[in-house]
Image (cartoon, rainbow, N blue to C red; front, side):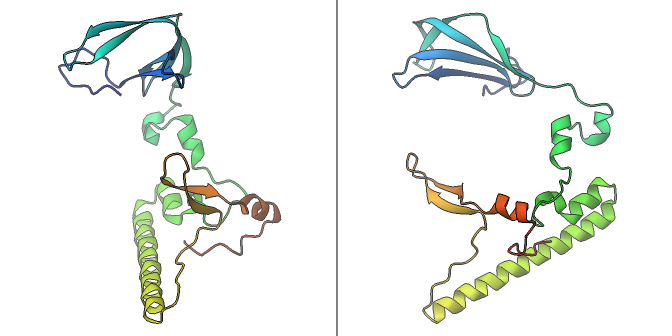
Length: 196
């Protein structure tokens, strides 16, 4: 990402990158903007260029003609009435049959807001937030009680994911452990907590 200022000569929202192999050799150059389109070009030759003002030596890449790998779709009709969301963004929140009752698309405050019932949506959002705070307080009390009685306390455990260390980065990540698609097939969501 290239930072942009009002006085900059660069294209606003510009993104560039180089795809390299394990040996550090450049194979492709990426360029474009994060909100319009991205292109790639195969590198056929690279040479060292001049040293920049920061003291870094720039690489100069000779490439084949670029090819578009992503282009923004035009916004749907009346987009200004729908927060200028793309067709995809609008579809992502549509309810789907047989989803878990914990699916965020089923949030009652969100449904009310999307139907233009702003006041009701705000009241519902406050109710949901208070419900979440109550659950958090209950878990904190359970943890303290377990500690006082020298018992192990697992706390909240996600239903379909488990936390593991990434062997390459050493960072904590969530890994799917199974169960969701089977529950969806059986239409059995009895294991889901009541979060709404």
